[in-house]
Image (tube, rainbow, N blue to C red; front, side, top):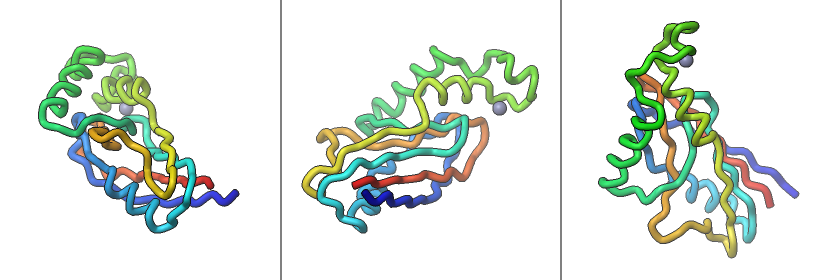
Length: 138
Ligand code: ZN
């Protein structure tokens, strides 16, 4: 059972920047072309997340608004009292959403809903260069 590990970098603007990485993932899968596989997409770091959404302008506003209610950026966090980096909200959001997602590949195709894209969310309070890992198991 081979395990292939690939990675690529994404530059983000931070501040709950939501980036569609679907095409990049598809490209990596295509390069190896497994018939059936499990694909794990992971971001290294404690202030960014991997998830899926319908990548459209309405939800690109709705999601940050929802995060703002759950973990407001302008609140004082215990993390900030200790580290003074002002990104307590980013850590809380990232842990809630999680760092990785698994996707099936069936008949050489990444299985996604018609309106479903794979996204990187960068919650940090500054622009970041993020490393995305893609592991293909088949
Ligand atoms: Zn921090």
